Amino acid sequence: MSTPFLLEVSGLTKSFGPLKAVNNASFCIRQGQVVGLIGANGAGKTTAMRMLATLETPDSGQILINGINAVDYPEQVRPLIGWMPDYFFPYKNTSVREYLDFFARAYGITRERLLDAVDEVVDFTELDGLQDQMINKLSKGQTQRLCLARTLISDAQFLILDEPAAGLDPKARIEFKNLVHLLKSRGKTLLISSHILSELGEMCDSLLFMDAGAIVHDGGMEDLLHRKTESGYVFEIRTAGDNTAPLEEWLALHQGWDVRSVQQHGVVASFSSCEPEAVAAELRQLCKDLPVIDFHRSERRLEEAFVDILIRRDQETPLTPEPPTSPVL
Ligand code: ATP
Image 1 (cartoon, rainbow, N blue to C red):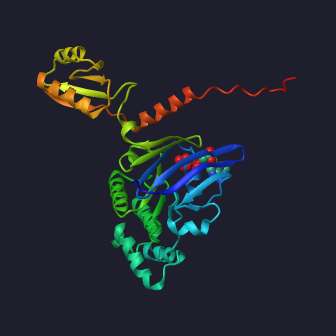
Image 2: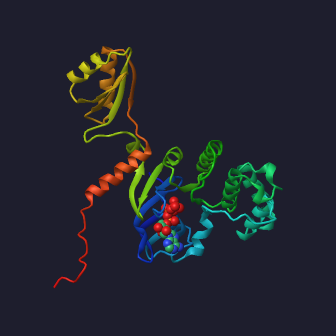
Image 3: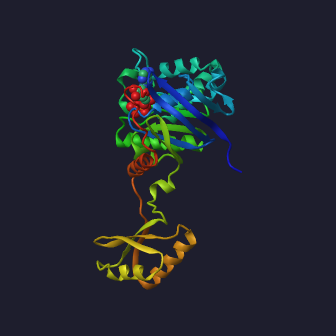
């Protein structure tokens, strides 16, 4: 049985004047999933997330969180949500400990739980040595960890993180990725936005692509990353030595194979079936006949997948005629 949905969004729309920042977006997230929200600057990610976090009211559409209508009953869903915005206002003369203490009280955490709640998030985000540090003196990475600590303090089950890894150096990014894995292992559900695609690819179970306010892709990573043709997957194959001729010959003689390019040390070829058994049978035969040293499905970068989706979408969307400049009589 599949896990129930934590979030169900349908027809979500929000305009600012003539601009449709979010345009009829529909998607669902299951409990315990880590979902990435990807889109260029201005695609509508923050606006969509702010509506999910009950900070912005949609013009139309429905948001259900644990089955509760978030638009009609925001106060009921807020305890379920941890919101990490993409900006941070460093309060003056406030230490890390005081800052978290303040948010814990704001979330209504009782006096008895307060110390433990702050200690837990400080420990989780590895801010232990920085508790007395003034927050306007923290580095970018430390500030992001503080922001995450603040988001986690209420122990909400649905975490909405807007560009949490923006501006982090490679080491801090890896640390952040590890924190996301830990949160997932604790059963949290996460929606994480970014315009850096590779970053999300490594963290998420599933991806939502957003373009000009619309969701243009909703699904897993498998089909996005593995290059697929009309008929099947594309493989990169290499045999010992630099001579690719025997391999090319083998592929030409075996049904279903189509050589797409010959490179210096190997061949890129598509096979007419995605069925694992059919592919395994081909590989077994190939290994019997030739000294195969590498055989893998060709991967593309998420950026390429995103661009492909946008191109396909443009091709599928019929051009709407320009509105007439003067009334047609
Ligand atoms: P980024 O990656 O740059 O943060 P985004 O995908 O989060 O971008 P949004 O911040 O949601 O995009 O903005 C979507 C569009 O809505 C943009 O064109 C933006 O200028 C516009 N917009 C967002 N908030 C407002 C507002 N309060 N008033 C007017 N326009 C807004």
